[in-house]
Length: 585
Image (cartoon, rainbow, N blue to C red; front, side, top):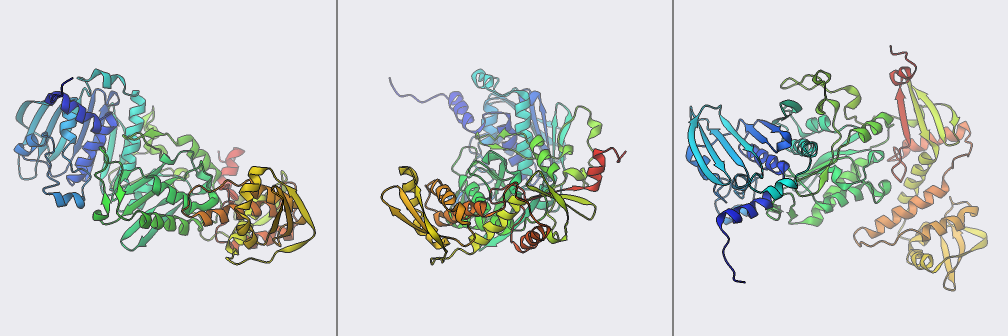
């Protein structure tokens, strides 16, 4: 079979497939262009989930007539002029592929007018071919209307997801992208129904608190020329997929496994391996240190100093996490679980945002508060809430213990429920972890050493941890291949639990990654030891013991969740309690 050059029509359709694979891809490319054009107001309209029509209009700089025609040529762009520009890309788009790729598989009408002109230009393309250029009436800015997407590639059209799936995907991506540009107003319409209205605001955090709900803390840390900002949620609000955490790099929504891992490492042992946090991280760093020219859809990046970025994100999250001390509103967890909708971004990864009620379309539009430009109205129950920095456990008045494991308290017309095992476990975990020493700590000698028989795999795993366990105060010695002699244990471990905790420590999985291995091992061991050293369900605590625990929690650096991420304390305000009994009517 002889090699031949493909016709332009086929080559353009192949190239378009790398950039545009669904309506969400079209929206992403056109919105990015609008932001690059300096728009302060962007409006997106879809008909039939984008299959019939996609329209993106903005009030940006607009284009002259000749530039509007040239914009449909492949690799025609105003954002790059020489090779060195690729090393310092400051715009969202730069390749000049978006418009020609979209035009190759649809029917496109572009209307644009720059500020110096009193008339607009209208350019029409069908399947990559120029059909007409004419003068039109339009306000300053640009509007691109894309009709009948993939009309000339029926195989691609058949693989499109449902209308609802595309709508969810587009709304979620637009909300995530809006985090990067808070000074821009974003509106979204589905079949003439307004489903999203994000007014321009003064800061990224102000916008983020309109999008995310729950108990959240602000991240703000500068490390040399790297600035890490964001919001992170309480560990109890964790989700089951990593894609529900939004990552922005210089304003661009990206996917990056290393950043996700850095965030999880910042949470330490509070998140299980299959759990991921709620919130977002925004990285600002010199554009020369980021390569965004590695993915057709520009959704992945490569850092010049990845380890430095990793450490900055991990430190930023870890330094903030300890500020979670106050109670968690249980309704925020329920609200989070019911509101999250998962959607896939253009590259196949997914993002989910917890959306306040006023961002979710309704069958009856009057249920959504009216948003006027420059103002925001959000139902109080769904606003993201800062943890109460002034909260103290020692202020609580104990009412009693119930269901074997929970403490019921009250303070200032609020009811508090505390998981006493989780609370004691958190305190012990902090104590054990912070007391870890590189040198061996003296333990308490057992009057009669305990002998423990392990299976071969457990014995192998424990043998790799003996040096670490001895630093906590254990004295262990193998007698044969699988028999273990326990002669000494940490002072806070009861004699009767020595064999039980050592067996559990042997079952801890082997670390596969070398990065941060010692820190993770310390946390795993400390968590297991803390669990065994803490009160258990069914134990009866005296009032003096409860108040001593409360004072200890006040001194603890992080007391809102146990080492496994479960909440320590939740609260119900008086209006919530009264609503249960109809006293609010």
